[in-house]
Image (tube, rainbow, N blue to C red; front, side):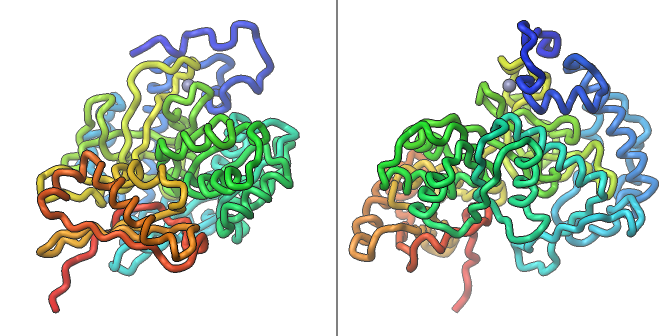
Length: 458
Ligand SMILES: [Zn+2]
């Protein structure tokens, strides 16, 4: 398809650590000393895919039934994958255990995800020790794209449980000879800025809104640029307003990561070029599909990120609908990596709102209007599809109560300038903006979304 893999990446032969770490993982896994071409990588992936399908059809009662009408032995190219039926979060909820391909005593960890709906059953994902080792490998090698030995890395991530992502990251940071500091997810901007300054944290890892809160604290205290050299944003999609703020206040480079429990935490990571995130194609086959049909969208178009795991032994996922929106960035990256790049869009596919005038409202539109406002730390959006459709925004803010009315007016003004919302607001869409009681403590680690509130009959 392109010649990216044959490019000379480091003509001067610099030390091994300067190679983009995901390319190092790729070469290790493919047992090569040079980067593969796209064609070689795809051929390798096809082998892993065939192995995955063989194991799924013979070891998992769920997949044996789910794929019974498809000739999985007849896969000639990766494109043939689109012939297979997709799997969903409901399959994980209802048949999780039956998707498992190993014996019970080979299960090393079960991750239970909070149920987001009212259906009751939580999603459960099963991992073998081998699966967990691949996640650790990704963290340890991947962090080398972000930090150097001797750096102090402040992690604003959940860290209470031994297997939490914060603890996993801390171990990877230690492995590479750097110093981890666990900052948790419950501190306000001033406390975060002070913590980062006290430890002279060169690197900060966290969700866009948590790092944004730190940046506001940094600005308020008048702290200098140049202390933090790199921020790695992860967990949730990255609003451009946050990236701009970090450049402005911290003067650092901003790298991004995409991942979810289903991807084994690691999913895609930006290289130094910072134009999209390189997919972890050693472990994942990512398709961008039309949500209604499951067919691939043209390269470069937005669609649903659909996952097939390639090396997952306990619970493989086959054409799993993530509900996240993404797009493939066409063409090779200037860094020379053969791994494809992806952009990720804020908000869940299921949250898209069809406004009365026919335009689609996404979380991204609200982010663009509200996140440039420095006093807004977070917000919750609710869509009431009643006789008078109402968009209700609850702001979380650091301002004292006396400033709330003015803040609501400013937010309403920002929203009314949104191209997406303008026509519907003029045509009578009701906008209700309020400020939540309390301050920073209202921030959670849930992925942000627009909540649909069903109309209820009095
Ligand atoms: Zn690159």
